[in-house]
Length: 137
Image (cartoon, rainbow, N blue to C red; front, side, top):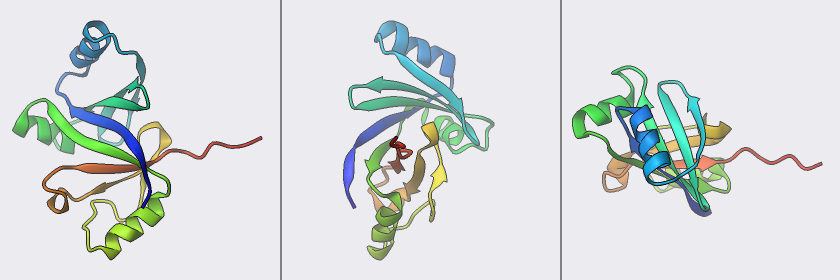
């Protein structure tokens, strides 16, 4: 599996507006976008070749909302950009690694994403992401 970079570091939050203001107004980061996914709202702030992602669960059943309820606002996961997510997942399965997603799903910025079960990674949640392919003209 070829890991290209840390794509983003995600922070689970209980108050998206407040934390967006902290990153924007206190730290001077530029908000790239806010997007609603299945059970979460995410805000992405680019930072060099990486980003900080804020994740707020929509409803108490959302995993990020459960995280915040148990631990408070805190580091949620680390996202690694991979060159080919399908081959990365195949490699992890061959190594006996449990996956939360057996096949990629559409995530932030239309990336194909999958999460590794934290029981296999020292209780740290890792996301793998393959950005959308750039069309050549």
